[in-house]
Image 1 (cartoon, helix red, strand yellow):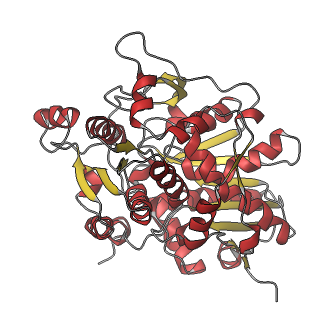
Image 2 (spheres, helix red, strand yellow; image 1 turned 180 degrees about the vertical axis):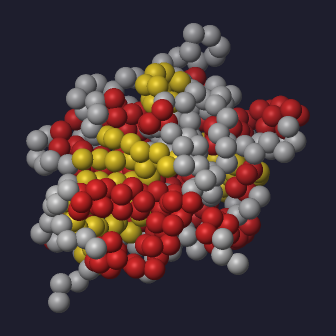
Image 3 (cartoon, one colour; image 1 turned 90 degrees about the vertical axis):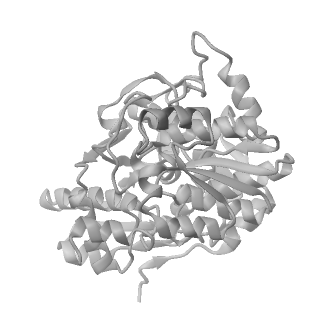
Length: 433
């Protein structure tokens, strides 16, 4: 019997994170200060973890993973398995195309976000911080950082996009069970939040607003430090553990992917699985394509401009060169709200600018992606997060396209999270009573 699950032994857990920056076709454009106002670089230096900021500008290809973090990774279930999706292949009638998926939903909090949450919490504790402050969209990052903070005996404060905070009551309970304090964003806890609520008391919020609140709160509370769950270089470096494991698992499977697919809002899970493969491609070690699946509610890689922009609504961050819709863009809430961010990570944006990364955006009504998720559930048996459904939908579309062209192809998709706390979204989008 050839098993569908390809597992990596614990002793093969990577000992270093991968940083694609030195392998990019050209140097990554550095952060910039805006033309007026206080220094944003100095502001980040006061509000963020110093070790993470050091990694942010690192030109080292490999960054050692501290032994304590590797132990935390193992406790949290790493390495995670890679699966061959044979039942989904059969349901789609595939003969030429092979489908695989990486199981990042198997973390204690149900998503890939734990990979950087554990690292950031560890570094914050080493620097003597007492509280972690952050934003969250779908709630996966807020859950992950709350979990990591508890393991490090730190407090955690989460600003959660109001449109999602209001309907994800079970995930809110999950986060609070971990001891975190959660505020619907925009909130009355910050100046930017109060200003927005004064204009609209029912403001749905956005990730950009929640980032602004988290930064402002961390800056005004002694012993607090701000942690970001996506976009920045150090986050994607930590997430490279996904792709590094997957590379070794494909060796065990005696196969090679032709296409890597992941959903993308800011870029952490997509970058996590794609960048190690892209790095090998840039070093002429393999051939591979990369596809980011997005929502038309926030199609930053599809419709955005590659230019400098702020990462938050209140303009507290430095200017970063990314594919952006504009930091003040209003975006309609969706069920996969983790994808509703105005800009893509600078590292992913640089690859998109060189046409190494391609992107597709699906309608904001989300009917097609939830139908794909149901097919995945009924064939493979795993209920996935709404965000992950975008990766599954794009993979199915690419598989059927290749099959119709009689093209042999191997597609690997990243399952970024589980859907156990998203039942209401499935009920809503699939009309289940």
